[in-house]
Image (tube, rainbow over all chains, first blue to last red):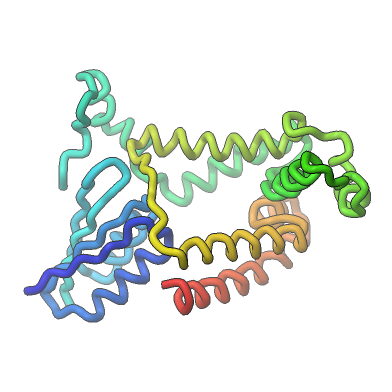
Length: 75
Length: 190
């Protein structure tokens, strides 16, 4: 069970989603990816994609306009 | 999930307001695509009936550039474009061009929306590549919008509901452009 951080601060759509998809392919099942974002539409499309793919996720608001999406790779 | 509702310095009224479900549904959480589409359609219909013109964005950008050029001594009023394509430019000023006011409204509205959602943040530029991508993308979009006589708002969103054929021609080529642009983004700028 490894944890990896992905810094997507300052990056606009669709870059955070594409980088998240790439990063997850390199992880093993059960690993956790923490994606840092400050672009509100990434807060919509990354969870949407995780939901579609069936990965577990949780969104945390770190501060105004900045979030962490914690994703657990399930398959 | 962290408690998003408690902000330092916010009084009990603001804290209660921010944590109410109505406030969150209206001003914090993103609306659905359908809600957004219906609201945009109603606003565009209102704009068309009150000003006689459907919504457009980039024509005013060309005016802004021309006004800047004029301010530094240029003579854009003599250009063919502002005589034959957009003769309206001859009489307009920054504050009498409805498109300019709408564009300013979009910027101020976006700022207001992000402030009300409590999501305002000054973002740092991450890399030089981002600067290159932004400038290159802006130039391509601006140039393309003038060649096509409109952007995805004027030439698509306003054109198709107006039963104008040019919107349907614009649409497939917009997808081609978006496809090539996305490939370039992934290849060179990520």
